[in-house]
Image (cartoon, rainbow, N blue to C red; front, top):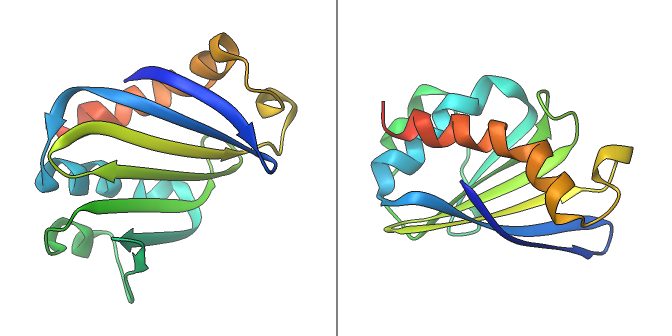
Length: 128
């Protein structure tokens, strides 16, 4: 993924990323499925509405919609994070809590280095 921009807002870093290619619903669900085990308190939202009784396998059969959001505390990055995918686009919005020293400011280069490998792994999972 390519970081387009990042800014600070209310103790969060708000960022926009571009995927290498536009993706459809199936690929978005695969991305969410790939990180399911690496979140505490994971919530899945479809069009900003929480999906009840979600488990890892049911993510792959969610009805197609406009957006899919995953949010919770990432055990990989160690902070609250919210990732929103937009169906049939290459746009991803990512909000990260400014909860650790690593994520205190909206420094483009530092932020990119902190999240890029994690996000690239999600993007690869979309195409497997």
